[in-house]
Length: 240
Ligand SMILES: Nc1ncnc2c1ncn2[C@@H]1O[C@H](COP(=O)(O)OP(=O)(O)O)[C@@H](O)[C@H]1O
Ligand SMILES: Nc1ccn([C@@H]2O[C@H](COP(=O)(O)OP(=O)(O)O)[C@@H](O)[C@H]2O)c(=O)n1
Image 1 (cartoon, rainbow, N blue to C red):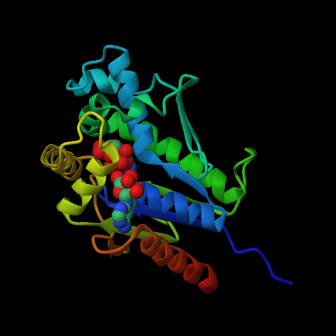
Image 2: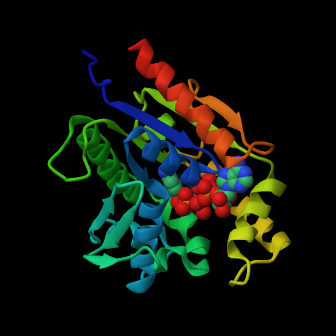
């Protein structure tokens, strides 16, 4: 009789536009795992700060408010959801206003402590098969900036995605085509500014964990990246 593989925790990190969200969702869907977009959580808390008149450039004001919003993430890779105080936030967290403010908010230690706690409990529940309908107990793919380095240092597999700044900007502006912020040069400048802020902050910066597998996606299709990660997960499961 075949036994089900042990629950697996996969951390996928990297800068903007490297393919973290698309890869993580596809890998989770193919392997029947849960999926957590940690960037959406930082965007959600940023949206709440902006909506509640908190000065996002004032770290003390952000720190004082960090415990107030209730953020809930749905972890089905086919339909990931995010709500703040019971309100669907999936649309508003993607505006240019939130994108421009998120690095400042996510640099505040109190914000990181709060969100990191949420992430760890969601990962633990997915690995244990918690009470939620989505928690299948098979494990989870968690994507972000500091998952392998800080949030889940004991993850079974850590991937660090990279791609050239040109490829990343072209992907992002392709997504934005026809919407605000679609200009390629402006997209690249905004993306590099966010990378610099995320990589240079004191608390838990964007960083490749020492034991992460680096995958440069510049010349790869999304399907090739997904296949590569799925293969690595299966190898890990076989080695258990
Ligand atoms: N390997 C790839 N080749 C081409 N386009 C890609 C690739 N990976 C992702 N994309 C596209 O690039 C855009 C950004 O991908 P996304 O997964 O949101 O990146 P991230 O989460 O790292 O910011 C999406 O439109 C996605 O479809
Ligand atoms: N684990 C994480 C994930 C995101 N973030 C912050 O959240 C922002 C938005 O993340 P995201 O994954 O939605 O960004 P995109 O690259 O998808 O636009 C990042 O620029 C970081 O400032 C973080 O600090 N730590």
